[in-house]
Length: 446
Ligand SMILES: Cc1ncc(COP(=O)(O)O)c(C=O)c1O
Image (cartoon, rainbow, N blue to C red; front, top):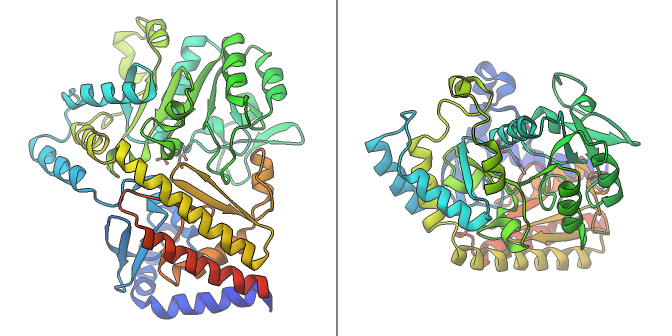
């Protein structure tokens, strides 16, 4: 054993030694929870077992062993607002005492829809509980409207657990994404896949005339950050219009670019916008909005008698509690002012990481999108999902994350991403820079 494996073993031993209570709880969890975790993604944390959390506030949390961490994972964007923001807490407490869920609208739905329209430029909204559902319902309505069977996604995208999106392109052939559990059908039947930034490929696939909707993040964020090249969004919009295909932009992560996400920051003109995760400060809530033109086309096409069995919506969707939490979060937490603080923090984080990489002489790079930043284990910015995916190194990623965790820093377990909240401070960022530098200097010297 040597090199990275040796360093990993050292960090795992340190982790086990310093987290006896989490270790003990994990032992009990293995008796009663499938694979020892309440949701199987939590197996992905490095260190052999997940931390059990005692409490979280702002940009920090404390585990059951009493150790405090700076949180750059922020619930993988669910807590981008910072943990337990006061305005959201107040709204939740007040609303919960009045009404939680009724299958009747509350007035907050109007305020939230108006605010989302103002931010994202599409005027007709519906609510769901997760971004996954917002995407699923949008796809279904797009197929219903266009009477076309397929969707188009970009290679190595992630839009939640939406069957149609678990498709990858390998050597020009669409197939199930590796690791996708029990795919209902070969996704080649439901989905066309193109590399991000590949305008020719997009044109070729849309020309089949069977694509109801292109579902895309405006910049990929789930395989490492992949920025759109100049002109890509113009081409995407022009081609979808020309081929009668709808364009759905998923802003669930790219809300990091500002109050109206990438759509407002770059003047995109989608037919559909979907968003979830942080918009209610961590309370389950999501939204999907349609352009006025699309809403007019939809009007009268859904049979009243069948609205509750059409495959769109859900019992707890648009409940009064999640609407109140969304209202408070949008009004007082994810504000213009908050982004004006968060984005410079991500710039500071990026500079710190860049300096560390240069000092250690490693062939890595760091990239930023609004208040989100990420390092990748290759020298150049990826142009598409495949290049980003191929620059991944699972063992190295786990080591970097565990090294940070052992020194009080939490990064998302899915890639090497850091997110800034309104509660994050310069000192939090500088602590990450210090720890990152220590890690890469050791790696560079190895
Ligand atoms: C861009 C994007 N859309 C949708 C989702 C799904 O969110 P949820 O798991 O909350 O349904 C995710 C989750 O990571 C995402 O990154």
